[in-house]
Amino acid sequence: MSEEAAYLYAPLAHKLGLYKLKSELEDLSLKYLEHDAYYMIREKLSATKQARDAYVARFIKPIEAKLTAAGFKFHIKGRTKSIHSIWQKMKKQKCGFEGVYDLFAIRIIIDCPVELEKQQCWQTFAIITDMYTSNPKRMRDWLSVPKSNGYESLHITVLGPEQKWVEVQIRTERMDEVAERGLAAHWRYKGVKDDGSIDRWMNNVREVLEEGSKNRMDLIRDMHVNLYDEEVFVFTPRGDVFEFPKGATVLDFAFRIHSRVGCSCTGAKVDGKNQKINYKLRSGDTVEILTSSTQVPRVDWLNFVKTSKARNKIKQALNEAQSKKADMGRELVQRRFKNRKIEIDEATMSRFISKKGYKQNTDFYADVDEGEIEISTLVEEYLDFLAKQQETSKPHEAAENFVLQSKKEDDERGSDDILVIGNNVKGINYKLSRCCNPIYGDPIVGFVASDGAIKVHRRDCGNVKHLLTKYPYRIIRSQWSGKVGKQFAATLKVVGNDDIGIVSNITSLINKEGDTVLRSVSINSMGGIFEGFLVIGINSLDNLDLLIKKIKNLKGVKDVQRTSY
Image (cartoon, rainbow, N blue to C red; front, side, top):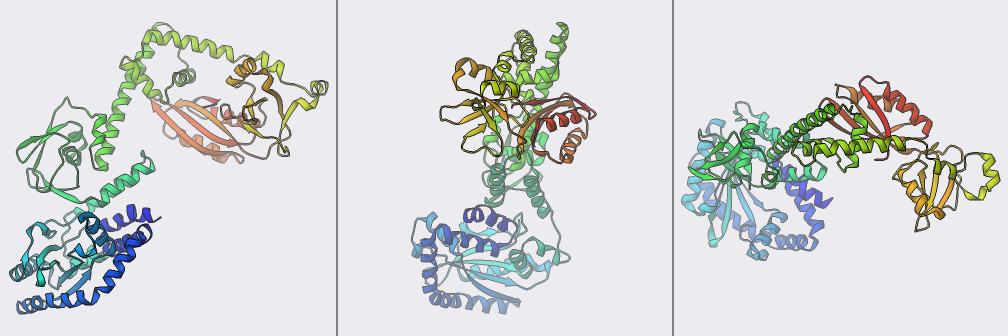
């Protein structure tokens, strides 16, 4: 939980402008993740508090006099930096506590009308830098270009008494409330013109949260990149300002303008010089995107883009390109089969594609389009597969002869030779095999594995024939004993027309079944046809057969089959 707070929630609070909450989360995380460092810094801060307070009083006294003489309404606060911030400086500068020179910051908060804010902030800046020497490398101007979360302030570092560096933050009452309370404080002040930066940021966060194609780790990574990294500000040739996380590239800039611009981007002119698409942007760059009608997105682009928007658009473009290839490959297959006067059965074709090792039909047809699969050979392979499917659909005589079929035969052979599967079975280590997922009502056999456990297979499982041939002495005749009070996993493959609402109708039908639970759904759609794999929990073969009939009766469904994968 401490790592989660430091990695995700503290950066989120920072981006929302909730700096007090951000510091508290970081300090609490450090307390548990770096226990010794936390208490060492806390003790040293406590020991030096009196000396720090006295130094702050000496530092601000002449500033107060000058600002009062200038007629400003203001107040000044001294703020010790957070323990987490000090620890990060110690690690970055590779020094001890005593080596960190800016342990505190002075905040000058001016009370003035909105229209005079920038003017009085810069006047305060001039008064302070006349008194103390400033460090230009450490100046941060968030008055001219506020942060994307609305934060506005002027940060300078000056050399104070006793040759100590002091950070001074200059802001107004309104700016301070935004910094303390976050985005919500913006709407408390009437007459403050919104430049759209807040809306842009909220849209960026929304895009990350609404991206449904990625897994959880991708989501957390994108949230961390978009929330925590430092920002760079770059310009268009017309002078518009864009904000990006540190490390963003020309390609990120292109996708920020428009997805079509990003997909056709070949590089950019940065400050008049030609740069590649992976050039990392720096604050102050003026960027003009170069495009080409022949450019197409490539997979390697995902290796260097920084923003989630660019990454998502690239993935979307790659998927669309793959889909177009798949459509062309499907048409090629259909033409060749039609020339041979062979009718394609979609369900059989899907099983054939899976047998060839493809998880998605689109990948198979795309390979056909690219010539990775020889079309003439494909036709012969399909016909062979179809013949084997028709052959295996016949009863397995060997298996039926082996498994006891009636109680009379049981009595003749002896009940001790039969494994009985049921709720009251004790002392027998058996498992339901995942290769065929038997459920109550399936004809079954048992197989003694090398570890002594008995694996229960459906009698029509493709592995049973192999086991009977190679290990006949390990086969155990098996049967169910009464109705087992549990749910079994079963996978259904559904093929149908890709009509609006058909998937919703299927899932709704399953959810209405009292003893059936829908565990997962995987849908793939292409060329007006969809195929879906539904994993359900069901308590008997009879109920499964009844459910299959109901699904087949739905409009648009072409085929429903129980499958093992």
